[in-house]
Length: 309
Image (tube, rainbow, N blue to C red; front, top):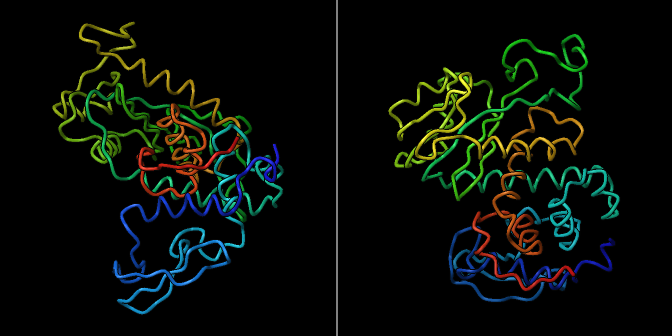
């Protein structure tokens, strides 16, 4: 796969950006005025505008993560396309023919945009909740004031953020969205905060196991449990957490691709994972455009005419 033979032209990528960004009409990113007229071209590709409200010029990239970027837009789109596959940043840099540092910084920016775009809608219906633990320290951080940890990180008891084995809370809405959310621990208050932030108050039900921390959810959205210690994994009425446990079997191999992640950056990788899982039935070209532009979470808002094949 080569960017020059695989990716569309810069002009086609610019058209996708323009179509998505100004779907509801062009408006000034500085003052919000819709009194705007076309005024030449920026870099011979991007439409330039003049705002009659504030008298300032802007273009299709102004105010986006592409603004002032020296990378062509088609490279941004190519990075976003490769992020849909289980490839490391090193592999992205090699395939896109850019430096490792450039690939690292651009993928981090795209993941941050995905993270911000996922803070809006809450889960409804029947939601299954469970946790899993991952090994994640402070990879890449300099001048750590602690002794080296034991290889393998065998921590007694349940892991926490401080012990470099942070819990990952998984929420799966049956027939709907998947949420993988890092947490500092799995105490009752932590679980309640995550539930209140990500699950709607009018959700039909929340299903968990019998872990004591989840008892704080009793009375919240019809909380039901299954007791694994007594060999109960499902009971009448479809009460089980098998769906979210199965999701962890997908999440663990996906995470292993990156060969160690700083716990401070876990939220970025989970944002990428959540997006890919929730849009797995969509066309890869449209998903790449959604990752690159990273604003609305609903991929149906993107009527991309771009073709990557």
